[in-house]
Image 1: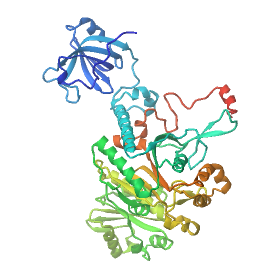
Image 2 (image 1 turned 90 degrees about the horizontal axis):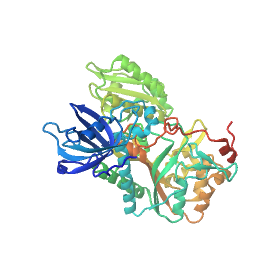
Image 3 (image 1 turned 30 degrees about the vertical axis):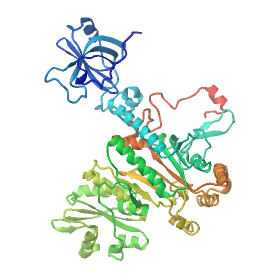
Image 4 (image 1 turned 180 degrees about the vertical axis):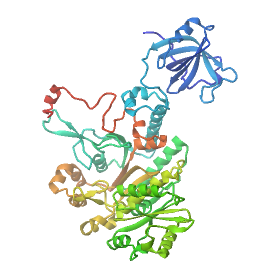
Length: 588
């Protein structure tokens, strides 16, 4: 094993002030160039790159050894820092005004030719990148993502410590309490036939910590859900988990806003205006068609029930009469869409699960629509005026049930904004969505399910609706949204065991089942549970948005694929029969 001098500087550190200094650098060979007998290498570490020059007139032996260097060799280089010759400085490198004139070179480790270049501009298949993740992580863009993630951790720890929160670690092996997604189960070797679950969240534990008197809890914690994945979802993910006692919604939201403002201030140099805007769930859906609206552009949804009820267009009139909704959006400057473009848009809308799409154009000839014969010119003009349309605009209309109408228009709104580049990508638009419904009806299960989770408290004025009209009951839940992405969410919790039992009943969780799954929490509530509430932020998603990454996999050091595989270490994998026998498990 070769001996070497320890580094005196990183590869991103040297500047003209160091000219004349003898420096030792260590790192990976990023590239090698042989120009007329003089060899140049760019030496790389996570701090940057430095150009090293090997001149045979300086040291012929070192120059000869440099001729053997290849990409990704690990080396130690010592030499004198010199100013680059006039006209050769590289303004794209922080170290671009200097060279290190090598007098010593030690090859610490050779490297095989990597399966892809260590370069940010590569378009390599992602599976190959994940298989060789240790090489992928050498790329500056991923290293910068991980460094920003580290800095985010420090901001979080400092902020909550300054606000008197206690960091508490909760168990990773816990009782299985399925709450929507599947649990990851861990068999117990000691207790035959019994299983632990990996936590989908520390929800029950943090509520118990409130009962225990820790009035301000925080944890950066791992959570696990065995569910189908997407680009922005992983089987294991990281939450910033928060809970507080003797609070209402405003208290929790104020703490959350302060954290986000601190994150943007320290990591992006941006001041966030507080308090953030509030939108009720109803307003968010009826104006933006989403409970996580992107408000960086306008194009609000307009409800047209009053105008079209009793009109000659039976599709609209009949739907309104049955309690449905007719609504639309104005797409600015899109009256020029061709017939083929409109046909494709109609087909796309039908693929979203509604019967069709009606539209109206305001061209040079005036208002034009295939449904003019049903609506009449006068009503078309009233609709255009109500929607704030102008010449050159395209109006799109959907008619269906409340949720379906607004959700479909919300999807169209985003699709049109992206097509027409109406979204200001430089904006950071934060807001709260509040007053979510307590329940939503699952057609698949034919029962009510909790929109958030079963521990969410109803609004006090809606408690009486739990018996008469539970579908109308609103919750004390709130989500923070950034540029159309849910950053995190939470609620004021139920702290009364009798109310909690009523909610379980509405969710179809019988008393025996509730006792089996959540008895420990219900029992804790009997011994003086304070009013409490909290929220959890998705840390991975925050990093993804702050770095402008397209996937969570680019901000997690060792992520899984969409099928929950780790290609680098081939997890999950088969285990030995001996291990299965110890667990009393047989693979069928």
